[in-house]
Length: 366
Image 1 (cartoon, one colour):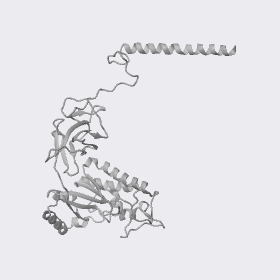
Image 2 (cartoon, rainbow, N blue to C red):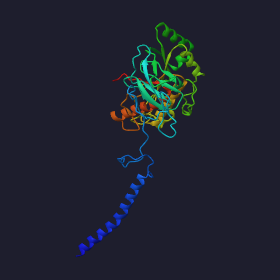
Image 3 (tube, rainbow, N blue to C red):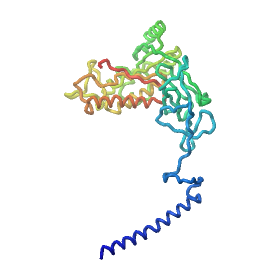
Image 4 (cartoon, rainbow, N blue to C red):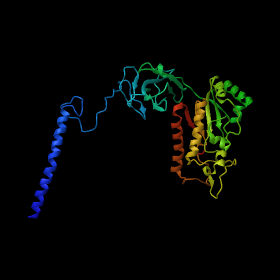
């Protein structure tokens, strides 16, 4: 019958296709046995048909728990204690291990940020860390402790202990004008000494949006934030304060920014009836949903870190407390939370190489 003829024909076709496949399979097996496919010695049991097996990585010593990191690379050791080479290319990056402890009690400090270049890890519960990256200095900090920079040449072994000095911050606050005024600044310094205080909060971008020293930021110049330069050599100004043992905090007013909202009305918070929103002080606000506003404030924060501040403090990192506003996106609990959290996460990430503390003021309405 025709159906049987078709079946016989299909069998012939399948047999014809199967024979070369079998021949190729035997050829591949023979080639593998002679080492032509893989020059490594063959084991009795063939490895899975996955790709080439990567080089074996050395396991961490039992007394060195791995620390939390976004880049947990391990690599072959060249023999130098405490130093391993990276896993890509010619192993250009190196990995360093150590333990962070309290300088007084010698107790381990958990969850302490450790940075190398733009890489950041945190210590585990035993205070240990392992970090990979390129650079000359390992930078460390922890809440309640002073920052510390350690030259990589001082990390002699994998058991290197790095001690951080305890620091309880007790600060006074100075506006841009208070910091620039010799009289007001002098009175503040006397008050610090008299009351056993050790820190200053200083406006870098205050409530009116002005930046009191020259910065390499074209947008600041464009919008008029640089009209009033109060301190010419800002790094030298900060260094004099640091020479007195002071911990310095840069206050940056973020979304309340009259110069930026005036110059860039497309970035401003609007009124429901039309026009730009004004708060009770008759000042304009920028829209926290707009990424260009984020970028501007993050750029200022990086400049503050570069000139010598120990901490960046973001203030007015919120939306206006008014129901009569409209924004560039629908505003509800979820979207507002995403905007504020997103800005702070972006700022924190951008500030990693500077090893500065990052804080935010919380508005009094809870």
